[in-house]
Length: 269
Length: 194
Image (cartoon, rainbow over all chains, first blue to last red; front, side, top):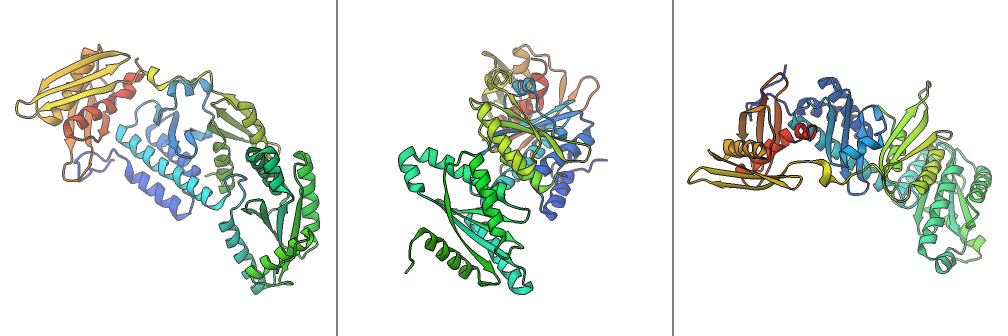
């Protein structure tokens, strides 16, 4: 039985009781993302006996996005009827407008949170980790290495003559090369490894459970994938291994950088 | 609940230009085996290629299907939604007038009442002027004015069997909010009959 809202003296048709509980459960497990939107649609369907529900949301980054009950694809003909109009479209159309409005609002929040969380940790061009999340991953790996002796390798990679690529073929092609390199990097990783774009044409990788020799296998895999994407660019790299070289993150970066520049034939003063 | 890896995978696909919808299918072991993208825009083939690359990173072997929505999506104007053109309330005389527009036609409803009931009743009268037979009666109009920006809530009861319809809207004044809330309660009903 629905409760009476003391404020409006209406039945609690807004449904924010169950929505609030659903949000709290998901926040507690740290999972207020796209999964929340689907689970909200499923709970809404249970409450109202819906056999179909499509939620159309607008996001600044993604544009119009539709979510359908049970992750079913939205057929083209159906999209034509909806026309990308924001809101909850359901069959049968029996969800009170207030509850529909509340569902739309909290799901919009969930989508925005997920986009913001993903964006805060990833480089938008290559979709690998950004500098900030890499620094955090390196700090954690180094702390574990210092405490438990777990070995890992830090690899820093720099694209060769990337400035010339940009100058000759333009920045758009330069971005394409960076994206392809990012894809190749992700392909070359093993489970538990981390890749990041540190900025410009500089990338870094943490190879977990690696004592130095694993870097050879990683480079072989990376070259294979670069070849598959057209061999657009070559790279130079430097490595440092923890705990052998150091367990201090900044020192590991300095050592790997020095080895990288040595290979490039640049002396650091 | 889908895993965080699946969520990031789906979000990455949704961030491709023109992607309106992503649906994933699972095999009997629960692994993702198909991914369907509905794409609107000029780059469906390119989106297909990039989606393949992304899927290879997360779920190698998943089949990628791209549905091109270019032919299907119609502009919002042709949807047949009833729009509020004007809502005027004369507090001294209790004169309420609402003008609505639907597919280029205008309808005007006039009643004498207070702002809340008047906003809803004049909207129902304007719908009748547009030729709609609206099988609902006005049950209540509530404005919670003690809270700033709190919306007006309209409850409509069907003449026959069926659940009540609820509409909610905010506006600069209660009269316009009541008119908008009435449309909010009815627009989806009207869409199915336009």
